[in-house]
Length: 173
Image: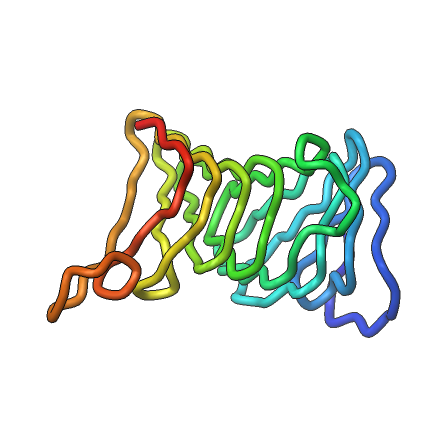
């Protein structure tokens, strides 16, 4: 478990086990392998701008909002990308995440970024934009009891401009 604000330079490799921290303690690009996990326990709001890759698991815990502004690490095939589980709080996806993003009960996915697959589980919330905006997901599915939260603006009807929008190749509701 990393705590406090760290100033180390270099990248993170999680080969086995769990590395836990928050946006202040985790820096640089991160590769998560196999059964390894990278856990963002984000009790307060923070921003992580590193790139993420590998086929391990990324976990968002804690009541705060984690704004992810990075992207995928080049060289990883889409099917080998990490699974991201949002267990609590909010993940503001303002960068790009590959793999599957699962939004669990009581958690929220928002932002203007892009991802490969989004699965909104019962009790989870998907709210595109950071106010009004567009979230791009190649595939998205909503389980019974999940929430799709949309913000509307007076003065027009253009999706992504006057209302939130999910751009997706396929959706399951």
